[in-house]
Length: 362
Image (cartoon, rainbow, N blue to C red; front, side):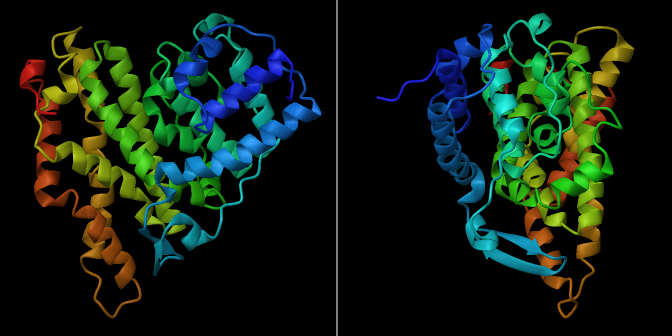
């Protein structure tokens, strides 16, 4: 039987939870309380960690959308089909010492007591494996109520485009995303070597944005709604600009999928602002209403791409790429866009009716 120290066991348990080996509930007590920190790993623990990451990280990519047979751009005009490993080959996930730092921080820090939890800072260039684990760490922590604030204060997470795309409510609840936190260079890096992760996680990102939007009707604090909505607005604006620079407009698909699902049954504005409709001063409430509709208002960002795509002729080089975007837009359509705009107008007009939860559509 292989034996490891208790601190090593805690770190390995977190690694298994991040990669789907154990449930979040199994490690939640560990995340909430302070533990002795693993300063280094012995050969047995290191071998087990390498095995866990080598198997689990790739499986997580597959589970979260890499298995889907989808269509994506290669270059700015070519469209290819297949599962992730068919479009790119088997993903090469490199893990740097930053992964050990992340795992040790999660295993030893009392995330439920933010005042006692030092922010996580990671130095040096992060590999694809490191970037993926930061994203998976956000996913793990958001399932443990009350453990999110330390992540929102940690530069390691706040400087990750992937984490902001997946968890704007987790990172932005206490402090919204700042204009200078994610630079053009950081975004361009995500759409360079890191683009394989953004492709693989399209389905998971859509799931996350649906969850964030549906969770807004449970928010009762204006400041939290404002912070989350402002973070969403800025991250979408920066993403659209980065996709334009990289010629990868197809990667807006997660946003269109999420919004299409949300608007399918033509919900009322109270689905977004029901919890704050009668809270606070009028000026603050107006800001919160505007923030609540950040995703809906954001549809006008890719809308101009759609208008350009509709003018491309079948013999033009951009025809396949344009058709791919138009196919993604079908999840919204003109009727969905009109409904989204009407919802935003109602929120801004401060006249959204509050519907009892029992009467709200799912």
